[in-house]
Image (cartoon, rainbow, N blue to C red; front, top):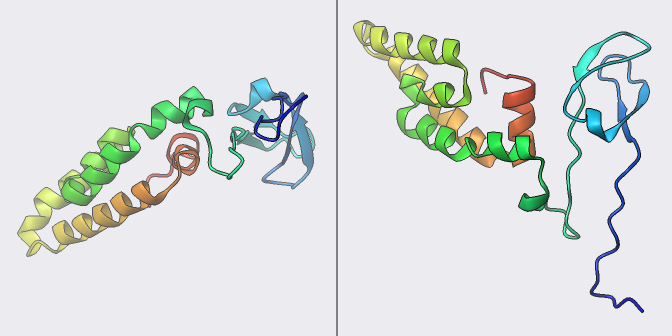
Amino acid sequence: MASYDEPPPRVRPSSLELNCPYCQARLSISPSHAGAATICPLCRGKFQAPLPMARSPLGAPHYAEQDPLVREFASKKIPAGVCGIVLGALGVHKFILGFVGTGILMLLVSVFGVCLYALPTMLMGTIGLVEGIIYLTKSDEEFYRSYAIERRNWF
């Protein structure tokens, strides 16, 4: 006899349901294809299939149940956020996330911006501050989706 304190048994879904971001067609994919590049059979649009999110009874994802890729990339969230706030003008947070080109751009604008009354340097510092705050306020899944899958360079 089961008590009320026992969680229900876990059942792995046989397929994941999602909508194509281009044509909004309802698609069904195998759980093993979650997080991988997917092509819509109707419009031939290529997109990244989302990762399923493990939820607790209260709605928050269990850290131990997160996908290892999400966990690994989310481990960069705090260092990138803090470096964005503290060293944002130098683009250090971009290097941490693997956006080398954007990091070099921020670094060059900041260094050479000193010649222009430091206005470009202050702008890069403000961008770094805002990005650092955004990094720290995103959930691990949002952070992974935005900066690992979508490869969003700015904000």
